[in-house]
Length: 440
Image (tube, rainbow, N blue to C red; front, top):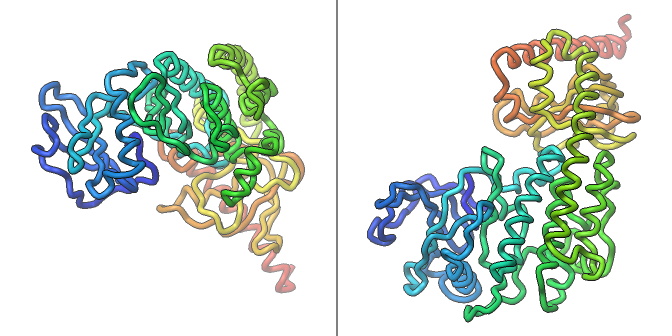
């Protein structure tokens, strides 16, 4: 579940929810999240009986920029009616002690969840998401609105695959009497002209969506700086890091689209959303055709992989479609010691070296798995060793969530494969121990 417009939200065990009288016509059900300046509640419209989300600003935060952002967003109530934009129903900003916005309740997850290297969505899914967001931003432009804060946290993916763009608090409104906010946005996704304080047009949002596309495909920002000043310098003055360095298996057409969206010069960037969308639609067909060929190739690898020797054909397809195929070059890090683990890898081709504190522990061949402890125990265990590719490695990455969602029969076969893998690893460890003890 996602609360639109909140960053770094946290669940509240015993929420201090406002009374029904404080938010007229809405019955508060629960707290969805808490941000730096506002809280978001799940509520029921007592008239329509529909669920809504209410973003309520805390009284102590009802001055300054945050109040202006509320004013901008609330001025859009009833104005933006698009299937890929979170609808704003009504707002109250006249009473500083009771400032709120009532919006459509969207059940889903923000794309922040899929913005790290170990959580990436399939390429064709990312393209479909970008198409929906681009359609929303094109519509907003036609209504005289530039979003100015396009980022994964403001894009919600519903369980049915529909995307919703949220949080127009930083928006630039043409022909509006509402005070416009300067310096708004999120650095990692800001265009060079936005950082420089230049006048903006829709091409700034195109750049930001390009930065989001880059992040969802690679799990990294377009730059490698860790401090704001250095990041600003790289965004404004230096080319973005080539996507091929971040990930080697991306379609060339998609790299071309992303690169063009990220051009620093407005003349070199996409001129309008129609042009951007045209390329996305064209890429969809190419990627779908490539994806079908790649999917069949992965299925063939799985069919000859000892890990899946007891799986039925339909069960292999189930695992494949719940996995993320990954290709790693020589020496590429697959798992890093000390990191939290949320997924594991089934090796289909090549071998990997397992090390702890730079000491070799094992070499694991295709047909086995690595990192499975992350999915077999509760919580998010710390990785106890590093795993790096030896030569080219092809693997399936499966998250803990996907593992738990498998059908009963597939779950049983996965458990058996894990036990077989564990027995083989224990046998190797025992043989090495005996060798160290001088026992043959």
